[in-house]
Amino acid sequence: MTTTVRVTTFNVENLFNRYALLDQPWENRSYEKIVAAVGLVSIASRQGDLVSYPLTEIQRNNTAQAILDSQPDVLCMQEVENLYTLRNFNHEYLDDHFDRMLLIDGNDPRGIDVGFLLRKGFASEIEAVRTHVDEGVEGKVVRRAASLAGGYWISGAVFSRDCLEVDVRVGAHVITFLVNHLKAQDGHASSTTRRRKQAERVAALAADSAKAGRLPVVLGDLNVDPAAKDGSLDPLLKNPASVLKDPFPADTWTHWYTSGKEASRLDYILPHTSVKTGEPEIVRKGLTTKCTKYTGARYPTVGAEHTEASDHCPVMLPLVL
Figure 1 (cartoon, helix red, strand yellow):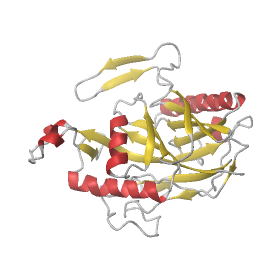
Figure 2: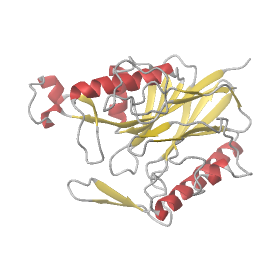
Figure 3: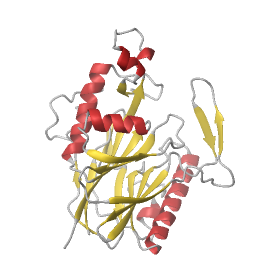
């Protein structure tokens, strides 16, 4: 008897919480909203400027719809502020679709973390969780406070955010999900080098998992297209000794870079070579109308600015166990 597990990864783009008492100007929000943390907002840029509450509600409804349309048993998310935010989003926008959630604060100075969720009613059990936020490239990871506007800064860490490992038992199998958000492209050679080191470490962790008798699945925003010539993902995608495979078609694209008007693949699900997989799916209905590459139907409230589900698409792959 086979079991199909629908696995989805989605970079939801700057999902944050904030308190209403920070609102300027004051909008006469209730006492409960002030004290109990208003809930979800979207950050419009790296400078921290906020999308308005009404637009945030539209945007996050579209984010939620894109997730639900992928029908995940397992969901891995990137760019979530903290576990409280994840729980709020699940309750307010996903109608408690998930009943088990994990998130460990990572190393990003903006506070964007990776999260892990299991669908309510999905027959599975979390057996172990491992974090790698304190792994250093050479020696100790150093954390220090920066300016008031700059949050905190970290040096020496392997991972920009985390490689969150979650062992999940499904029937007779234990799947190790390695949730990632690798170093972004910024034009600096040092960033490419760091991303390659991250990919090397993730590949080693996946190999360790396979040696232990588990089925590794590496997934998340790996932040570079496989067609790129920088070679930073070679340890995962082109290593003959890898225990992973890439079952997605070569013409897959998952991200729309608005200012560059470019589509690329940044999001991956790389299961163990022994795992059979079904037909992958990419939900693009939540993309901004600025994305001219996508010509299909969109959610009715998606427009050109701040109403899109994300600049990424949910990517779903069925694992057949």
